[in-house]
Structure formats: C-alpha cells, structure tokens
Length: 125
Image 1 (cartoon, one colour):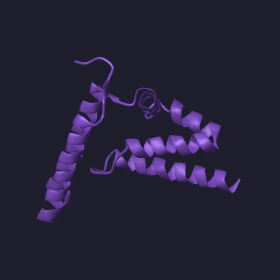
Image 2 (cartoon, rainbow, N blue to C red):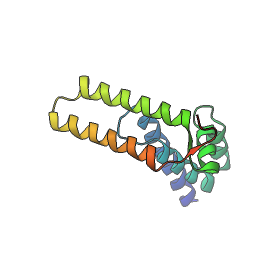
Image 3 (cartoon, one colour):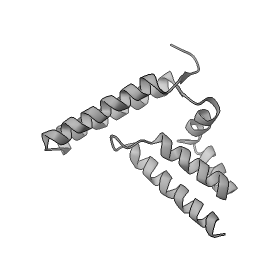
Image 4 (cartoon, one colour):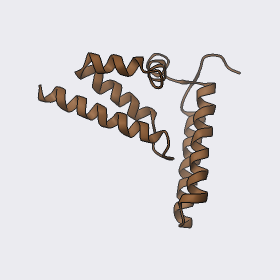
C-alpha cells in the first residue's frame, strides 16, 4: 500500500514537472511524461488510463511507447516551441550574459539531440 502511494505521488510529481517543461526552456517534457506513465502503470490502472486517454499527452505517450520516436511534425513543433521560449527568456527574462549563453548552448544541445538521437517515425516529408 505504501509503495502504491509513493508511485502515485512520484507519477503526479513527474506529470507536474513535465507540464512545466512545456513552457520552461531546458526542462524536458517527454522523459517526465514517460516516468509518469511508468509510475501510474505500476500503481493505478485508473490514473494510467486517464493519462493515456488525455487528449493533450495521451497520443504522444502511446506513440513514443510503441514506436520509440517522434513524427517529423512533432519534432518541428517541439523545436519551434523550445526556441521560442529560449528567445523569450534570453531577450526579456535573463539579464546575466553568462546565463544567456548557457541557455542558448543548452538549446543547441537539445536541438542536436533531437536531430541525431530521436528517431523520426511515420511519413518522411
């Protein structure tokens, strides 16, 4: 029973961090959503079903679990959104030059990871 409560709590925490990662540059979304799914599948069928059936993240998680990659459209969308958030942060929210450089370098690293490490699935355009 305690393990179940801990898994549900960890899954919910990962879900919250993953959702924050949608808008915070440098904070990944996918790994936290996958951790959420892993925690929920081991602790609560009901929460796992709700997560998988969610119109915003459900298809994304099941596609990743089945095919181990992203569609070209999802890659483009995530890169555009990531760079939009990076630019907003660098231009309007960060004052220190070194922090701006670090954020941009992390963005470049994320872009390179997306290009070279995450497989493209589905139709190639």
